[in-house]
Amino acid sequence: MSVRELVVLGTASQVPTRHRNHNGYLLRWDGEGILFDPGEGTQRQMLRAGVAAHDLHRICVTHFHGDHSLGLAGVIQRINLDRVPHEITAHYPESGRQFFDRLRYATAYRETVPLTEAPVSADGVLATTKAYVLEARKLSHPVESYGYRLVEPDGLRMLPERLAAHGITGADVGLIQREGALGDVALADVSEVRRGQRFAFVMDTRLCDGVYALADGCDMLVVESTFLDEDVRLAADHGHLTAGQAGAVARDAGVRHLVLTHFSQRYSEPDEFERQARAAGFEGELTVAHDLLRVPLPKRR
Image (cartoon, rainbow, N blue to C red; front, side):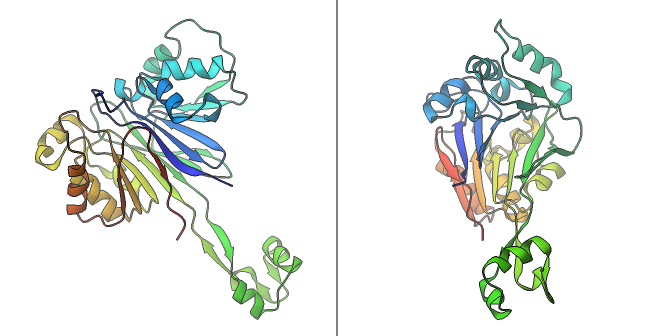
């Protein structure tokens, strides 16, 4: 059975707290694992969450502030120590290549696993697989930052009542799927489009076009909400979003499940983030993330 879920490894912003580790998020997408923004301590959080190095297939870094990337050294070395049997691809802003190189080779170790670097330098498609298309969009932050988005290709859902009406049964169901028609009955006559699932990961940024492009129509949006609305000026100055802004984006983009994360250590009441996102008019599912939480993607409509 395929599994699609977000495993939250850390939810703090610049400063970790007693209860919040630096950032780290694993997206399980069927048999593949995509690790986003491994901050300091990610390797230990993986252990606590039951995530193995063998579960990783891609690493996506939004930008090179420490709370989003200091864990790269440990994660990469663990991948090699455990001799992960498949290639791993790393995406990160091209402008931060020197930081990726420093973290990849921060200390001496033996490389045993192919790690392909595929840096990002512009908006667009990064990878196309049978299970998804991975895209990137530039965000607005003091250092170059990109958000990521997965889009599953649309499929088809066969409609039993229409099949029955045309007398199509048994092996003929597979035949019309393969051939696109059976006699004078077209595949479109007995099926409907099954919309592919969409997931977006948006970290440190002000409001910008990239935020909306990434969030558009997503089944799940994981988004920073570093500040509460009363600190909106501070958020803009430092290149961040507030809880209310995140809620408004999710509302306007038609997001089904909003996951708020990346919280400043100045706040002690996480429920206030949900209240402000709701006050902005978001009515879908909403999760205020905490470390080691697992959040399943919504079921298809």
